[in-house]
Image (tube, rainbow over all chains, first blue to last red; front, side, top):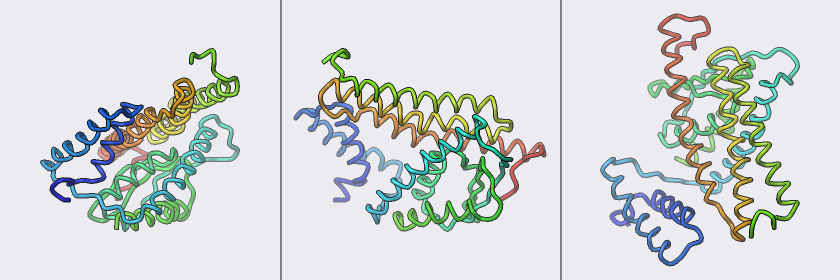
Length: 162
Length: 113
């Protein structure tokens, strides 16, 4: 298993990508997709990336739905801010978030989530202290942003990439 | 099947998706002009990279699926690659700005971690 499929997730992703690009699938393109999925990950071995282990696929699906919802909602929020449709004073600011998540893949997914939701910008992460510095377009006092990142995104990610 | 055979409801839906996506992208571009500081401005173009792209791609997939008479998911790959690569650019921009602001001691520089 390990020698033939060093990175199963990568193999599957490459095969599906190949099939999507060459749709509708024919016997020839399915054969090529299999060959790409089996051969290309061996090139990755030279880079020695760590294997990804996804523990809770169900949780991953739930997180995807939450992120999709947050993405739409924050897009609308930021659009309202830009167009000046929102009453009241708005403040922006930096928020420092102490993260317990140390897994590189989890952190990568977290940076994708924070980028995919406009209004939050990943500025800096210190791997020694585990602190993340984030810029938010709609700053609120207290730990509302810290709670949101930790409860909504970090905790599921820690279970998924445990 | 050509564009002329497209049912009216589908044509309206495709147009609505494309226009809404374009409107979000335009709002993001407008944000670059309207917002004041660098860190605020970086937020704006992500509108086009996220919901704007998603809506336009949904419209494109719907149109192609109806015209070709099968499920076309090819465009979703554009969304996947865009979503995965955008953080790299934004992170580099934010880090460079933070480094310069701290170095020059500008007001509004991010606090030390």
